[in-house]
Amino acid sequence: MATKEFNYKGKNLTELQKMDMKEFIQLLPARQRRSLARGLTDQQKKLLSKIKKHKDSKKQIKTHIRDMIVLPEMVGSKLVIHAGRDWVPIEILNDMIGHYLGEFTMNRKKVAHSAPGIGATRSSAAIAQK
Image (cartoon, rainbow, N blue to C red):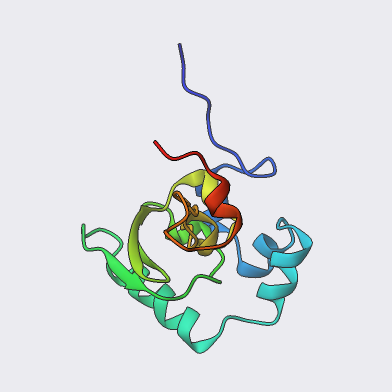
């Protein structure tokens, strides 16, 4: 069975990579379009230049920039994104184009509560003792 060819709004990856930034911005949803129309911040420009520099190498690039929008030229690169306390390794895939980097690294963990401690509240005394 043949694999499904990637396309984003009717364009394949090579067409997206050849596009001018203004043309690519027109394909994005409103929030991303508005954000990129304002221009990249200095930190985002620095990250993008690092990604372009280390594109072919297997080097992972560490970053705190979770609000960077995944652009077509970033596809195939490996990043390590900060998620509050941990660093989460991520490989940028075709399907991530147009999303923010922070969407792929969860920065909150599920809270797992255990049984109440001794003398926690008056209601904890009503729990059956084994």
